Structure formats: C-alpha cells, structure tokens
Image 1: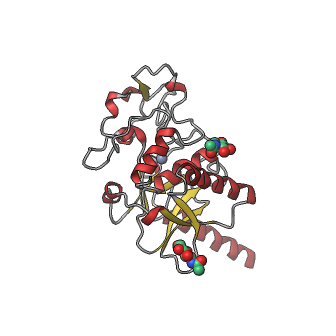
Image 2: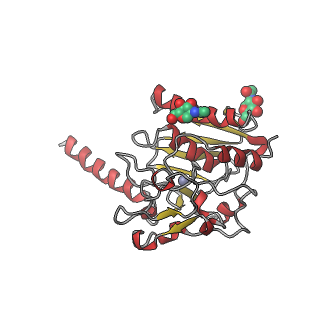
Image 3: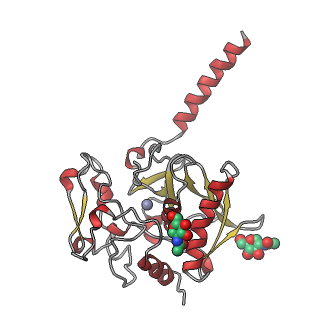
Length: 264
Ligand SMILES: *[C@@H]1O[C@H](CO)[C@@H](O)[C@H](O)[C@H]1NC(C)=O
Ligand SMILES: *[C@@H]1O[C@H](CO)[C@@H](O)[C@H](O)[C@H]1NC(C)=O
Ligand SMILES: [Zn+2]
C-alpha cells in the first residue's frame, strides 16, 4: 500500500515540477546548434530572445540593451559537480581559449565564498545564457545541457553571450550582409530575426563577420530545411554552408571581445 502512496505523491510532485517551468516562451528556443539529443531551451525565472539569450522576467529587454560588462574583465564561475571530468575540461577549454585569445584581459576565475556575483555553469535544459553580467548578487546561470550542449563551440558561444555579446546577425547593419528568407522561417518565429537599433547594439566599428561564433546557422528556425539566412557579399567562401558552424572564436570575435573590454 505504502508504495502506491509514494508513487502517487511522486507523480504529483513531477507534474508540479513540470508546471514550475514557464512554458510561455519556450517555443522560441529550439536547438540553434543542430545538435543531437537536445530539447528546447528552458529556464526558471527567465524568458528567451533569439533562442538562447535569457532575459530576467522582471527587467525584460532592458537587460539586453544594457549588456553590463564583468568588472575588469574578471568572470568568477563555478562548474556544476554533475558534469563528468571530460565535460568539465571541455568547458574549461572554452574559457581558456577566450583567456588566451585576449591575452588574459578577460579572465575566468574560480569563485569563492566572498565572490558577489558568479557564472554558475550547470546542466539545465538546453544551451543558453544571459547577456552580460545581469545579477547584482549571487549566481547567474548559464546552462549547458549535459547531453547535447557540452561542446567546445557551444560553450564558447554561450560564454560570449555571458560576456555581453548578441548574435552577429542582429547587428543594426546586417541587411547589407545577409538576406533573411522569411518564407522559410517557422511561422511565429520571425521575431528571432529582428535587428537591434544602433542605439542598443554597437558594432564596435568592426566589420560584419559571417564566421563569428555568434552567427546563426543558415538554417536557423527553418520550417522546411531551406535557408533562412543567405550571405549576400561574395567573399570567395561558401558561407551558406559554414556560417554558425565554426569551432573557434574568429579573429573578429577576438577583436570585438578585446574592444568591448578595452583590452590593449
Ligand atoms: C575570491 O574570488 C575573488 C573573485 O571573485 C578574488 O578576487 C579573490 O582574490 C578570491 N579570494 C580568495 C581568498 O581566494
Ligand atoms: C579550437 O577548438 C578546438 C576544439 O574544437 C580546440 O581543441 C582548439 O584548441 C581550439 N583552438 C584554439 C586556437 O583555441
Ligand atoms: Zn546564442
């Protein structure tokens, strides 16, 4: 008898847990990375814009627009103990690429008990991050789902959001570089291709970059497998099959990180 009571309580508990996850904007968060075994992004207490940028519910888009930096380029972090050692080294590898590329101008450091705000890298649902340092106290979540998101390129992408960066193709000047093929976008997902005005997002006076780790794939939010984004400048490279699929920071990503954090 007792085991039936337990089972019953457990079912109730599970259903309560499912309800605790806000479903409102979860449809905005498909797997942008084309990875196997990955479900939609989801977070408690946040909505998503552009698929994987979490926005605190209280502040809405203001957090996006302000994109606060980590003071002195120092990003305290902890990595959840549920990850395996291999997964931890993938995450650390992405951090060290950012540190090396910026000559340690941007630094990820283990947090301790007196750290006021830190990046809590945890195996949540999907791959997502806030943009910039948005908390004033405690842990700021960055999710890398254990099955699906723990890859060098995905960790780099989400860490770069956490450092304050938007998706490359939301730059104010993007229409000079890409054509958005609205007819191939899943209906209701068009807003993921919005452009941010130059009052919100700075290009840092650096060129548009098809090869950015922050660029969408050409089939992002596609309803039919056909491209939603096409490169319109001929650079002599087939960007349609490579954009959004890079493994490392591009030279321009590095230049932008350095410019944003006033590195020498
Ligand atoms: C604790 O971490 C902060 C970074 O958040 C660092 O500046 C400080 O030196 C660390 N303190 C100790 C005792 O390790
Ligand atoms: C590029 O990414 C790979 C993993 O995909 C990594 O092993 C390599 O160290 C990275 N290159 C640089 C320059 O950081
Ligand atoms: Zn992203």
